[in-house]
Structure formats: structure tokens, C-alpha cells
Image (cartoon, rainbow, N blue to C red; front, side, top):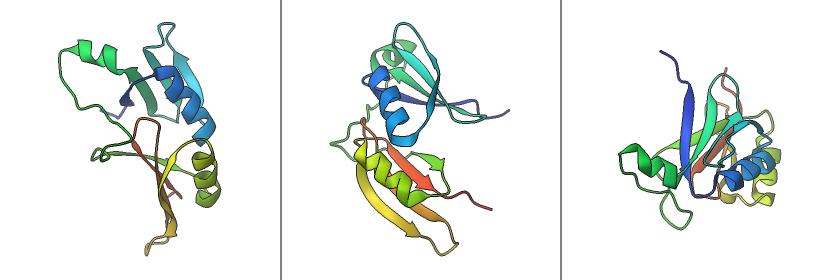
Length: 128
């Protein structure tokens, strides 16, 4: 098996797509005409968004992510060679700053922001 998608259940799929384009420089891979589902180009594993209303029809319940509540115990990690610049762009695009860029003891530079729905996004330099 291999990881095919990371899917976030969001309030507004189109708003999430536009935000991830502006904040992180990602490009759309696919947006369904219903605006209930979209995929972003992120390499071999796609980042996808599903509307909360559509996700609710799959027969399971979930806790919606909200920026005013504690972040869920999961994060999206995006790698970049210039974390400080990426952090500035993300915050200017509306991301909530969580942790400014810091160099970790193992040499990786890491910063954290939260997206429009409150999901935690790690911005980091690649490892190895």
C-alpha cells in the first residue's frame, strides 16, 4: 500500500483551495463542479478537501476543525527550503501564526500556522 490522499473536512472547499494557493503556493489538481471536493498538487500524495456536509453523508461522524478551538492531534507538513519566507507569506494570506521559525537540534527549521478551518500546518525544511 501507499498513502494516496490526506483529506481535510472543511466548511468551504473553494475557500480552502484559494487559501492553500495563496498561503502555501499549492496548485489545484482537481475541483469537482459541485465544489464539494477538491485536490491540491503536492507530489505523490494529494492533499484533498471535502465539504463537511458531504463528509457527513459517508455514514460516520467527526469533530469539525475550527480555528477558535484547540487544534486536532494531526498536522499537515509542507517542506520548503525557506521556512521564514513561507511563514511570512502564509500569515500575510490569513494563516494564524502558532510558532515562528526555529532551528531544531537536529538542524531542521520548523514553523507552525493554522489554516482557515483551524488545521495545524507545519512549514519545515526537508530532512536528509
